[in-house]
Structures are given as structure tokens and as C-alpha cells.
Amino acid sequence: METVNGKALRLKTADYLDIVAREQKPLEVTYRGRPAESVALIPPKLWRNGIAKAPVAQAKIQDASVRDTRARFGDLRNSAVREGVHVRITRNGAEHVVLVPIEWARTVLGL
Image (cartoon, rainbow, N blue to C red; front, side, top):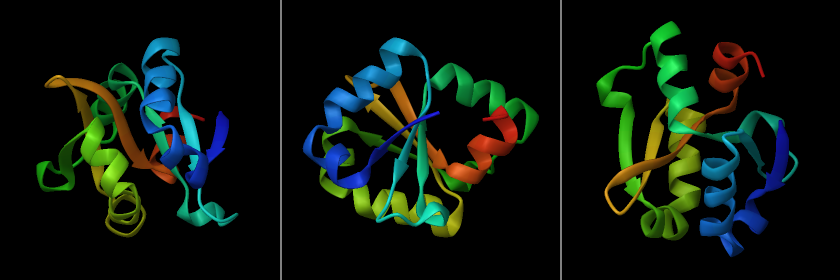
């Protein structure tokens, strides 16, 4: 899985989300060199396949627009890392990319 650091993602959020959606490949977002605080951005199709294997409680699924994601990325990342929240990132109301805890992505998707 390719990686990008959180600072670079904040500067070009939409670009990185578009790459994940277009190439249908996950992207690990690192945080200050702390592997336990990384998250993954994955295409919706991979996410749906993953939750079929390891369901996620509806209470742990949130939605955010690309704009909200750019503005609140730190909070969304913290929710994923600390609480296991999955964030469906939408563009024009449609699922675009999903932010998930890195361990969930590695375990369920075999990454």
C-alpha cells in the first residue's frame, strides 16, 4: 500500500482522494511517523467487501464531504484511530472514498 503523510494530504486533500477513487487502490495516511496512528483511504467497493467480512456497527460509520474532510481531517483521523470510526467521504452526495482505521484495512483487506 502506498503512503502519504498527513501534512501532504491536508495540502492536497481532493487530489489524493481522487487518486484513490480513480486508481481503486488504498492509500495509507501516516501521522508524525507513528504507525499506530495511521489510517487508510480506500475505494468504496473495497470497503463494502471488507464490511461483508467484518461488519462495522452503524454507530461507527460517519459521512463527510470532501470539503469537511479537508477542514476536519485531524478530528476524523482521531475518531478512526481511537474509536474505530469509518468515514464515508462523499463528493456531490455520492460515496467517493472511505477513511478507515489502518489495522482494520490491513486485517480485513489483507494489505
